Structure formats: C-alpha cells, structure tokens
Image (cartoon, rainbow, N blue to C red; front, side, top):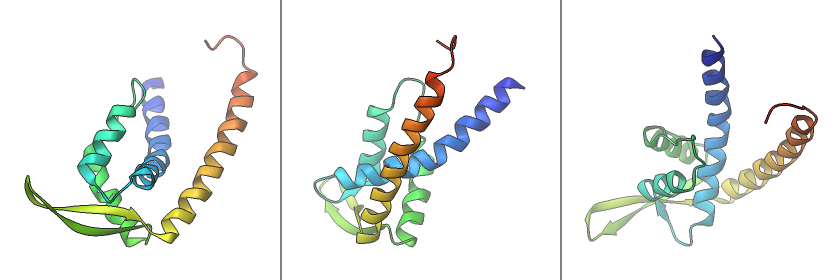
Length: 121
C-alpha cells in the first residue's frame, strides 16, 4: 500500500513538473529545438531515480502548441526527414515566468516545512 501511494505521489508531482521543465528546455535553446533533443537534455540532467518518459513528451508538445505556448516549424535535416522544431510563443514565455515564480515560492515553503521534521535523513 505504501508503495502504491508513493507511486501516485510521484506521478502527480511529475505531471506539472514535466510541463515546467519542457517549457524551460525550449526557452533556453538558442534556436528552435526538436523533441528528441528536448528528451535527451531532460534525461541527461535528471537527478538519479527520476526518469522522463519520451513517450509522454510528444503528446505534451502537441498540447502546448494547441494551447498557444509553443510554435513549431519544420526544419530540414541532412540526417533524414525534416524535424518539427519548437520555440516559445509570447504566451509561453508569460506562462513559464509565472510557473517559475510559483515553483520557486512553493519550493521555499515546502523546504521550510520539511526542514522542521527531524529524523527523515
């Protein structure tokens, strides 16, 4: 039972966090970025024990584009077919800034509360 609850908590935290890190990965790219590169960067930078499932990325990118957070273009590739590459829209930048602020404020609050619990280390 505790394992099921832990998995549920991890899933619930992962959904919102995934949206935030995907938007951030697109924002920090110096040029339009394709899905495979986003997935590679997130996997390379993920802390131990946290995985980013590539199968969830592409539906997320489509949703973000439909919501007006991202804009895509097809970029020719010398290695195969053209790649769909993404950039943040003005709305995407606004949403990322708001979510980043919320993440930082929430993190400080959670860390203050967790800091008051002895014996968890």
